Length: 216
Image (tube, rainbow, N blue to C red; front, side, top):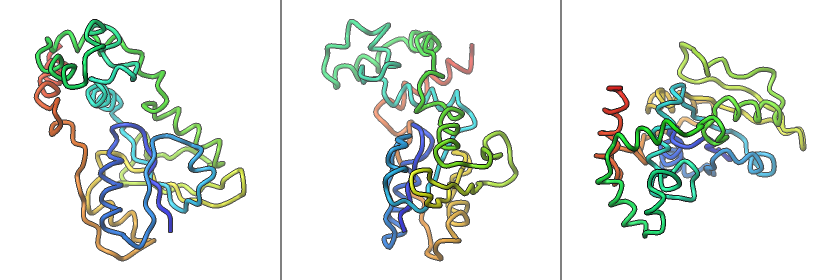
């Protein structure tokens, strides 16, 4: 069985991927970020789609994940810190550590976040619905008492059936992932939290940034 973890940036996809890879060596487990081509042409059976209901939190997390990388259009090194963009990655990180957090808040708010498909839940879902002929979009996107939802899709290219499992980031727990996969395996799953923003090099500045955002 081939399980693909397929999601936008900063939605918990790395945590799910590492947990499945470690817990289920009998399965082929792969991961990609909103690249539809891999779902169309690869021999995938189950697609796990984590997402955030709180898009603001997702955007803030993505902003800091790529904050020192000018190749991403929302990096401040394309705007307020453009004069430092020529520096090495290490030096750009040092700039972030000492810059005024309120400058970053203003810069973050100047970005048109909805234009980025890899950070836009609704756009991503519409692409999936069209390509895999969903009868409907998952109800769990807006609200649900259930921790996850399964939608059956049929690939246009060859008619292959795939299960799409949608799970909010907030519901990614060991218990919920185990329940989500019980139709495919009885093997015990161990949750491996990965790529946590507060644990990265920018963690302290990110926490200060969040406090500033909450006190506007």
